[in-house]
Length: 122
Image (cartoon, rainbow, N blue to C red; front, side):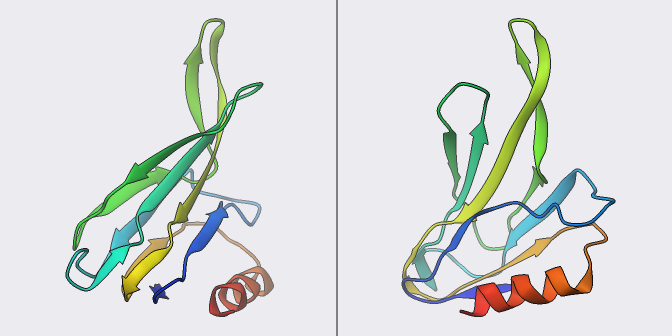
């Protein structure tokens, strides 16, 4: 769960810690954009080989959830399929308080989970 106030954001990241990582995760919004906060959109980026990163902004509404790739997804190029590296972020909250949840399905060591929680608090 993440709680972001004015000027808070989550930088681009992946949730792929651990030896066994499920390829999908869920990101959901638990507060109302436009009423409880402004800004705070879900941002997805794809990094394809030898190309610039391509961002996509996903404006979620209250109660909306997005199922996204954890770290990579297949992409069809001219020579067949290859892996595209993915990261996600939450853009800066311009006003109010944004509450969301991110569900990752992996077996990350507890120390990595504790450090990630500490990073979000600072």
